[in-house]
Image (cartoon, rainbow, N blue to C red):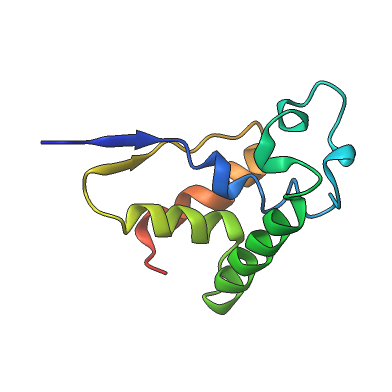
Amino acid sequence: MCVQFGTYDELSQAHSPHASKKSPDDFEEGDIRRIIPRYSKENFPNVLKVVEEIQAIGEKHGASAGQATLAWLLAQGQDVIPIPGTRNVKVKRETFPSAAEKV
């Protein structure tokens, strides 16, 4: 049996933290995303496009972008175990109920 673990941070972190971000320069000093190629100035427009698509899917189903992301990961199969995390209690309460939802 092969079990895949993974944080869903890469997909979901885009939803609210990036909502006000228009470039990697908007990340706080010391934020690791400033040096990750995925968040480079050249690629950032692609990140924002994915964010908009995830938000649209969530809105279509009455869910947040984080809920839509978690529901998608959970739908990938029983061998995929998302490891969601947040420092924000409000976001945690908003996202975790999506475990029972199907988007």
